[in-house]
Image 1 (cartoon, rainbow, N blue to C red):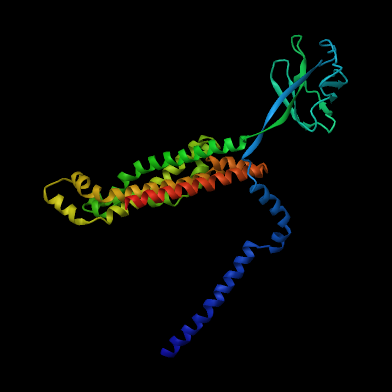
Image 2 (image 1 turned 90 degrees about the vertical axis):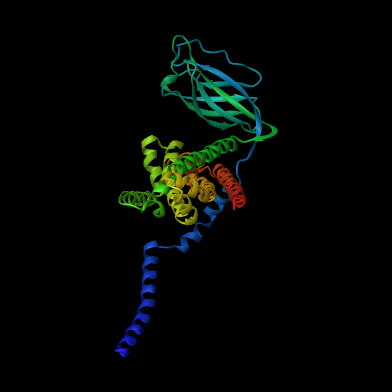
Length: 381
């Protein structure tokens, strides 16, 4: 028997590494790593990383001037405008047209190498963007523009082609991207704060019902204990990303409310379990002493349990707020709102400089909150 046992042990020692190697080979086939593709994509990766590492923090304040020119659509609907002959001016060829026709817009004596925004001013007063362009080294402009049906004259009033010229004044100001990132970052922080607050309020009573040393002292208490424990375990099995996706479809994709609901549910379940374990680890001496005075269960909790668990509860809550800020930046990718949603939109539209600004804000805020929460927890210990 001993010999057979040794042989079986030897076979087991041989088969174990063989099984691990076979499992590793199977994993490689499933994941299909391609180092060649990674190397060949190095130029693309370099371009993306260079943009991500160049966040849009500042821009030069631009002075804007506008020029416009009336376009009769269709021809004869209003008198043709008298063209200017000097100074910065616009002209079109032909001077009028019908929907579907193409006009050529010319600009003369405009600022050199300036950014220009082309748009229609509709007869109703509304604006219809055409595209962005740039003047040449001589201050000229030459752009083909299609006439849209919406530009047709109405009530004797014709549409106009307008250009807005932007000239940097040299003064550095915060970029619009940075302003948008700051706004959405505050949304993310407040999402995490509200979710943590609501989750904590829900978790506190659940934690007492999920603590075995308080509840498993009778049939009813035992039933409540197992029900609450099972509920917390069930909710904790769902990631915040999954819940955020579900609620984003319900309340609207990109809505911060979807993120708040998802984080509140996961926070309540997670803190409920952590709080209950803290309750279970308390010293039984004060409980026995208060019980011996004839106090009921509520009084025992208030005077013997709460004083022992308050530091842990506060520490866990602050720590979870820090966690929720990090998770909030991710659930935005599935429609949970906040900085994650901003980042997702910029990456999907290949605006990597703007995405780099969002990533920088996430790193700074997470680092700051991690440091602050750590310091606060140290003061509580």
